[in-house]
Image (cartoon, rainbow, N blue to C red):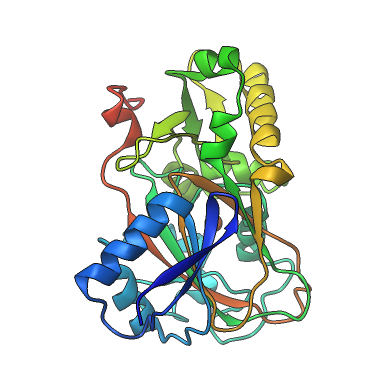
Length: 299
Ligand SMILES: [Fe+2]
């Protein structure tokens, strides 16, 4: 059966049929999914009961996995739960028990409910993320996606001109501080040293421009912090208006793939006394964004 993609939102987010993600893809299938990603930026695959190994194998057909060391203090309580190549976005510790609401790992996870683009705080931000729903709570826990291309297109000409060439500083420190979580270790602060990203990106295949925003962005180079934060807040408010947002309601066995270069996303609330087990594989981007724009990282 050939792959088909049904749009879920005008020009944004598609539902894929005619594929078993557990099986190796042929080149035409890979090309069809990549073309779907270029067009829709978010793809949903239902009824894909993947093992970790199958999820990793599926992901690797679209590029190299992202690989960054995580500071030990953050992941210590669950470092053994999953093997290499796949990240644990559950609310479980390494023994499979629900995390305490006072666990600092839980505080880190809460920050993912702010709008963000995965790994925008890394020198080379992520290309695709693939999230597999293994156990889904009975209420809430939706993931929302915002189309940052449509958001860019809808800006007025003056704002488009103003943001051209602007460079933001991204760090997990900013996004965690936004929810009042500032109790970071020296090791974490060193690991989360801000990186610079251009505020406008162009897609390498389609050339479409998009806003590259995230709650990790906490400064604009050359601006005062209050003015930068206020402007980033306003741009985020603009970019996450309902017309640009697709909400995914999870079913067990869903695999959702999104392009971090063209979208932002956020997790929504759920009852943390219920288990949510979702696992993410992530594809590396291909070069630092500022390097492509001819902008130096901070020393
Ligand atoms: Fe995320």
